[in-house]
Length: 251
Image (tube, rainbow, N blue to C red):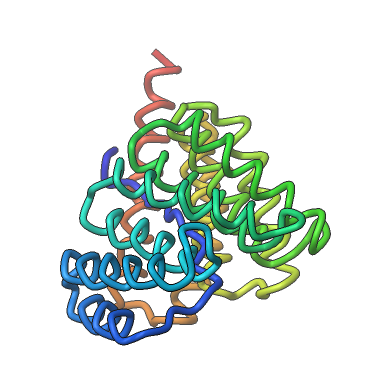
């Protein structure tokens, strides 16, 4: 059961770009997987920027956002929240209205709360992000599919499967429209919908979604790729559970 399917939470990336020598050193450390080193150099850059531009300068948004990201990568989620909220505070001071960078910040904060297992808090910030995205880009913007998936994932963790299904389905609609029916992300959402149907005991619907996932992955990766074989294993698992459940109901 634990190994059945998988879901992916995709956090929004920082929409601003760093500058300065310590940012370059931080980026190099990140590429090596040395996130503690990345934090060290980013803190140095932050100190320099505060001295040069002041505490609430827009340049500091980049540092605090990156510190949030790097801290999350080290598993220091409370630190990640602290830095992310500081980035958000400065963004709000620098922006006349809530823009896409604030939407990204909300989404990132939601992701950190999700890592902490605080799914109600994560939903609060995912919905804040989604509201801004809808206002700026409209109902079916590509990035909104990421947020819909994140919302669905939080509901799934809360075992609110009906709500999870609603938001996965909305994400899927947008992905089909913006990415296409055979995209990797579209396949992943089919897989997640299959998981929800499985949890609801709707095995035939689960198999239907997993079959769609399998066809896309076979087309993309071939039949022998590990991710394709994992999907096939998931299908076999659901079939076994369906047979087992059917026998119970006929006793």
